[in-house]
Amino acid sequence: MTGVIALGECMAELSLTGQGEARIGYAGDTYNTAVYLRRLGIPVAYASAVGQGDPFSAGILASLEAEGLDRGLMVEAPGRLPGLYAIERDARGERSFFFWRAESPARDYLGLVDLPALRAALRAADLILISAITLAVVGEAGRVVLSRLMGEAKAAGAAIAFDTNFRASQWPDHAVGRAAIEAMLPHCRYLSLSADDVAAFGGRSAEAMARTWAARGLEVVLRHADHRIEVLSGDGAELFAPDPPLAAVIDTTGAGDSFNAGYLAARLGGRPVGQAVAAGRALASAVVQHPGAIIPKAAMPLPDQTAFR
Image 1 (cartoon, rainbow, N blue to C red):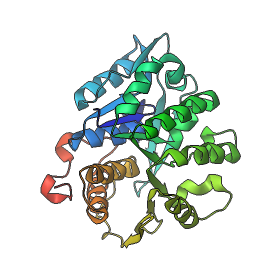
Image 2: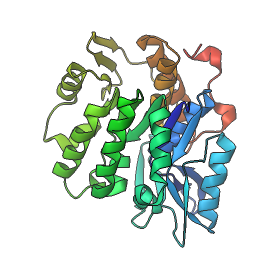
Image 3: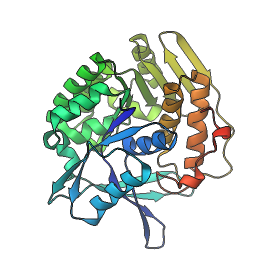
Image 4: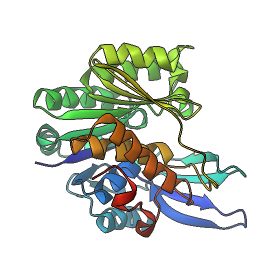
């Protein structure tokens, strides 16, 4: 059985240095989480489409190989180029993104992939990871297919983890994004939610949304704006005070994605919620002290510094 299958888009990442130069990496929200889950010892397959014959698609596939991610569900599309984005950081490490992804083959993944093979893999998975960005990338027709696949996978026993990760620029309007997210959540077991992610929900508070979906059976991890973390489920809620502030934050890119990886790795390992929150925070704290979404392997927290054990 495959441990985790993550669906989404991996793009070429240009991390601007401020000196007319950029560092090239490869990243994307579900990809970032997939990489960190794999580094924490969880078997992970990544499901997406890239181009063929260009250096960026080759770089993405080489990155998958280097990180030990299963490439069996990847598709190469001749004549296409993968998405590209650039990161600009301010003095506090907060980032702004600039995207070139309209022609990305990941948008057509569900029409390019061997659908029976994908369906079988999803049904056999322990955990499936998707996000609101996944939903935006695959488009309306793709969301119909994806919803059906998630329903079948859930019925077969797979758990589905969803990161709301709402980006208004990726949707025709907020109503479309809200409808897509609400249609997917009934299939899910885990929901990662931040205060910034509820913009699509017409002024509704993150707390109200978290309570609603916890009452419907999801385990909701709510990341408050003041860095408190609240985990809500049918069994109640646990609130965790903020960790002490870090001495330096270089780049917040990938912070939420890495937190999700630490949290889910601990939960998949049978750890209680408190240890899962600590694991997520430990990993995210390391990530924000390096530029780009994926930090060097040597910078990963040691096992005795986290709650993974």
